[in-house]
Amino acid sequence: MLAAQYSYVVLHEFVVMPDHIHGIIEINSSNWNEKIKSLSELLGAYKTTTCKKIHLLGYTDFAWHRSFYDHIIRDETAFENISNYIRNNPGAWEK
Image (cartoon, rainbow, N blue to C red; front, side, top):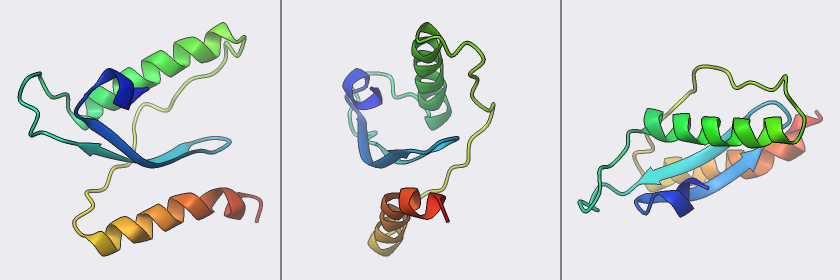
């Protein structure tokens, strides 16, 4: 959704868990042809859009938490470690 709506967003690893999501979002700020939204603005847009769709499916009690946890990935090793964590998280959920 975000990558389709915002040309400067690249989604890497992403997984939806039973009560939260994990994802790596890259914001390519070299695209100066449009206003670049902050991560907070992007996640706000994501939460708003998905919440509306979830409510339309009949889950009217659904609500996102107000905040989120972010971390800047500074090198390839960190990127690989976090990607592996996201990929393996669903299998670890039941444990």
